[in-house]
Length: 276
Picture 1 (cartoon, rainbow, N blue to C red):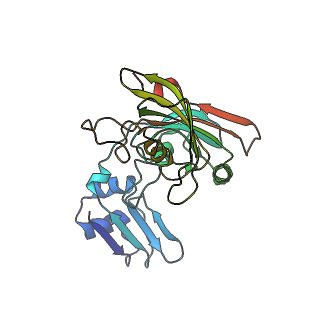
Picture 2: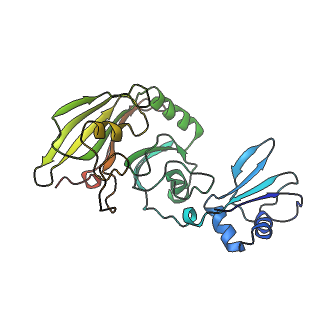
Picture 3: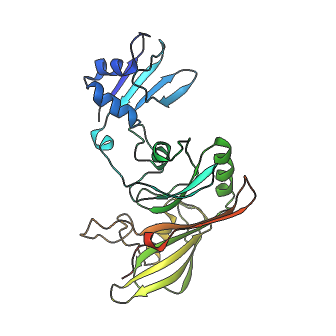
């Protein structure tokens, strides 16, 4: 995974040309890397930010950084689906494999970048809540910094009702509280049986969480003896690697901090894993 770093001394040469001279990559390869978020520019007073304009003229003293990983740049994901457009923010279905956050190697597979490029009319897109790469479901995307701060505040204060649906192995109890600490921190999940299929020996479970620890639902269900189907981290080893993690964020409800109106969003059954 090569990295290329260029100290800008010539303020007349476009950024892409400087990187071409340093890396030996073609102009087209560099443009694609820029589009996908793998090129950064930095200077002492403004910090580090992505650069997407191939013809950008930089000032002497700035630095260019290219993080070129063909594996990352070649990744593709399914499209996100707009559930509701509320103006200052929107609600989306994030498919399996789409990321909640990019890295220095690129951001083209993140949901906020996808929304920036595909939502009409085009608007800024700020992440408010996160889902694991392997999870699916509802996410909030803010379109102003004010909305992002307000909505993030609701999550921080646990003022948003969040529900998840998981397909697990085994006959799940009608109702159970899971409170095993995670990383030595308090973690509380409540799970209810929705339906069970005796043929497949799988249960569809509704989960609400009071806390938001990393992989909380996956760890809690696995620890209780009901691993989520397709969970390659906490479930049993399986030969069929085509099965994705069967965990979906299905419901969000909160009092909108911008309008004061109660809002709720429910994912349709077509997005849920099938128990049979």
